Length: 381
Ligand SMILES: [Zn+2]
Image: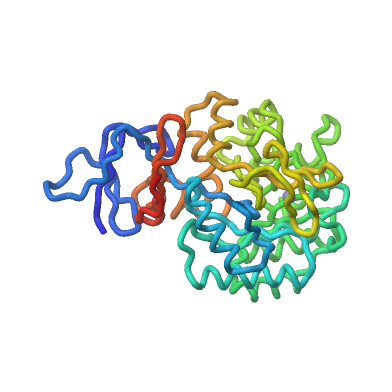
């Protein structure tokens, strides 16, 4: 497979490239050229923009399916659904749940990936929980919260064939620092979430190896000028990434803009999408909790936000509007920064020579026209 993509504009890490040809061989980007061979195969997207494939590192479900369904079909359907909204890579994300349900979900992800996913590709499992703190539980079930156990984690890791790449926990739990040290040493992204920790505790967790804060401002102690809290620790520490849900409901646009200005390349746009994404308003469930979705906002009976129905590309659209920064900069916070948070940015996340050829074709309104995964067109409007 060897072809050239023609487009008005390509979004690159450091700017835009116009009126050029992007050369692709097999599954890789080769580079840009102004002159192509006479017999070259050209995919003509004149009038459109070509951007990197989006990478959602925190997504529970979409279009009626959830990773916690614990079925191979759910994982495959989520992979397929994500394509049409421009996501080429994702981390299937679990919830706090019973030991049996969690094992079943991990097993289903492993089987589905082994079978081969037709759409967006899994880059590993994200375990959101179960080592959390009740005060900021969000839609996680506190009945299953407990202290971290490396032995338990290793069992999951074995079941997952070593594909767990990220785990979220509350650092104030007994044994958390040791746990963070151990999993980080194995290359797993230890992430801070659903926590009431103070600033000092968060700082110590990062010293131990934690490098990511999950959905900044949500499910965590907020910021105070005399006690920076979890949010203050996330914003002020240059060693860490911070995830942000840019739907305008989870975080006020002003605070989203503020977080973006402070975290810069270490801001990771995510969706935290649940099964009601790409679905009408109505009654759903998240884990064992009933959830009502009204106006696209998912709430539990107690009024906690229960994930989102956000499309990552709409997050890009929103953040661009809120910040007025160039599109290429915002876009990479949903492709390159997610990859970088997992140490995968040498392979994924931007249009650059040698990287995997994941890309999305959009029009001026950011409506998706085509999606390509590893050089192969998988979706066309
Ligand atoms: Zn959460």
